[in-house]
Length: 113
Image (cartoon, rainbow, N blue to C red):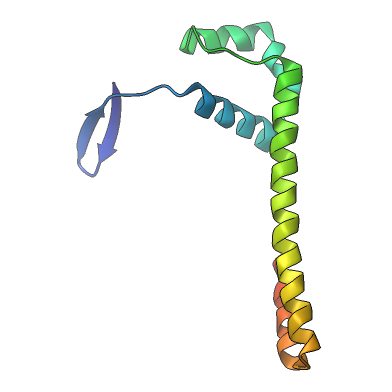
C-alpha cells in the first residue's frame, strides 16, 4: 500500500515495485551527488538496501559504472545534437544576410550555456 496526499484527503493506492526504475533513481543519485561507484559494494549500504527490499538485485560496481557511463554518453549525445541544431539555425539565419537576427540568435545561444 502507498499513501498519497491529495489536497485535504489521503488516498491509499497499491504500490508496484519496478526494479529498473529503482536502479535509474539510484544511478541519478550517484550522478547528482558524485557518489563513488564502489558504494554498491559497501557492506552496510547493501545491508540497508536489503532491509528495504530483500530481493532487490543490486548490480556490481563495474556494471553500475558501465550503466552510468552509458547514461552519460546518451546525455552528452543529446546535448551535442541540441547544440548542433541551434548552431545550424544560427548559421542559416546569418547566411541569409539578416545580421540583426543573427546577432540576436547568437546572444540567446551564448546566454543559454
